[in-house]
Length: 464
Image 1 (cartoon, rainbow, N blue to C red):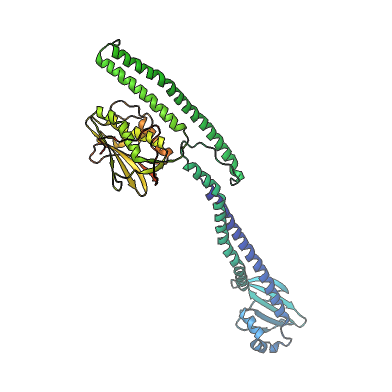
Image 2: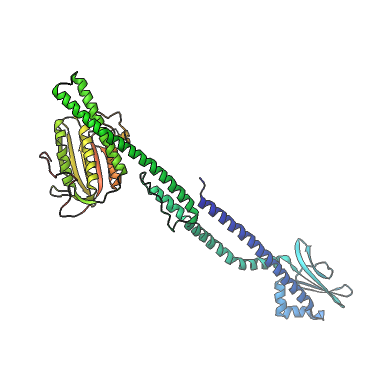
């Protein structure tokens, strides 16, 4: 996958590098031309400044500071009289053939020379200098000119990296915002002044997609809720008629067949109730948090399911794990109705899958300033391969026994997600039983906590 940031940086860095190379070449070429003009002027000045009496030229070259500097620059000086006789040549320099008057560049013994010849009435003066001296000076001038550019290039690259990173920050922010959203958060994205003009079409298109998804999801939830609501009353009436007919003897048949029909009817009623609960949880906005006693909520749930547990001979109780003490009322800030529904689904699920004569404990826990609870049973547990999938709606693995619709744990996971809680499932050590843990409830101090809506706080006598 190609990166916009990488592409921008690549083009800008390559552009800066190419521009720097062209600028360096241009600066060196300009410095070389300027150095050539300077040295041509020097050759011209040396030729004209030669003494009229060539006999004293050697002494002048040895004593004059100006001529010592000229010798250091490797300037060759030759003088001929009007008869063509060489009357003067600078010391320790090669002999160059005599050239016509003016400037020219020649090659002698694989060395390039810049030569200037001055023709006078009584003599010819020829001065020359190696081209390498000019190139050395041009390179030195170019380096003196280029070092600010060499310092500017890394600074410019860092500036480009910073600007590109800052310029793409809104894209990363939009990606992070979308990645942090849950699958149920379909609210439109905000179009405030911080959204760049270039991203506005993308945000508008995303909002349009979110609106369509929200409409489709709302239609699905409405259909499920309406269907469940419409089915609940006929099914309840059918069960009452079934019980009345069974009681007065008008309903006859094989007992096993009647029992199967009653089981299927109860399963259908429970499925409709869970569908209605799930639809309400999907459509319900997060309720304002209130102070609720986790212990009272647990005692109410234990009381509500005590008769169902007694029918199967299950020991159902409430326990506290240190540092939670039996006197700790465990006040938390949460949606009491949602928390009550969550707990009821966990206990109902545990009772349905725990065999007769089993044991289920509701354990209150505390860790790092947060409270939670665990529903621990000694039933068959869940295969490790199905632990993640059992949270999917209508999933029932091959291990599942008894009546069920595959929605109980999905409802628990949805409520936990809506309230910002952590819900985990794990098999107990030894491979016997399952632990359903809910953590992340914020503890708070209050003199009195509200009981669950529509409930009366009580504890059963068989609480641990």
